[in-house]
Length: 196
Image (tube, rainbow, N blue to C red; front, side, top):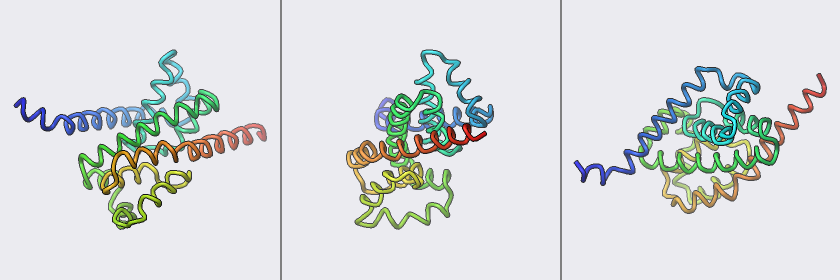
């Protein structure tokens, strides 16, 4: 029994993390946390000094269990914590969540990707991971704020890309897309509010 746990420790941890985050994501969705900025802000700020940690946990959860658009929580981060800290908390949690997704995909394989995103989405991109230019494609996709990042991180876990290469791309290419996405939406919301 000891030998089994020692040999499968990595897989056991991955299963536990995935289950916990799935339950948290489902409960948050059921409670209507993502229905409005006010509801989400009240929930996050109710944790006081732990608000930033809770926000980052929510952000990681929505990356691992993509039941809501990631851009939504990114915007919420800027609205709740302001441009600087919102960006920092988004960056830390999105990078950590992306790396976690890579490990989960590498552990569970193709079945987890199909279960979360469906066969149509998988079939649309599966040929790319065998392409020699996939690293470039992935880097550009992460750099730009319009690509399906969560899906591509799961997909990359099925490729031959090393974790070192993957994490380097995430750490270097995420800041511009997070900045453009969060600040663009935050300014858009401010403009709408001023017009009303």
